[in-house]
Length: 225
Image (cartoon, rainbow, N blue to C red):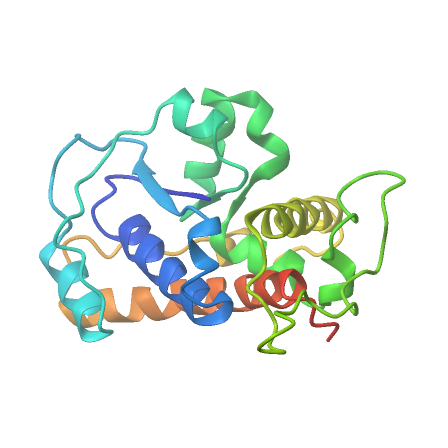
């Protein structure tokens, strides 16, 4: 998963760390490395630290972004990303212009949350991403350790398959679930504002990420509802 904003200083790094934390909580720390979350900026300069207000907001949530440095968006990052989530519609347009093949897997954060709302784990269980593949496996019991009799963490391959199905479902719903106004799909840039504005921005990002990532985790873990 690649998250894109303008300078890779505020919104996209906050989203990167928040998404990683959500996945660790939902999948467990053993399975979360099966999903790589990165970020970049359409006008970023490589090697700049995260914005101090963004760092403060993340630290307040128990996250440590001190090792983070910015990256400028390039074709190689886009080609390797299974899903591209953008802060604004303008970033989405820049992504698709840079790498036209990404059009089917590029959304704004809020758009992705909107078009995946109402889906169930069974809708994106392994096999639903592939024509003719096995469907509705979300209700199957996850693998267990015969000695401990506890569910094992989902494998990276299972997570990948569910993620592909989620993106496929999102694409199919894109034209069917429109925002009240186009600007509703954007998360405004907090640069130049107070730390409280950054905190509100992080809340918006977290709200956009929570539902689809929880859905992915439940599907990959074999939870039907």
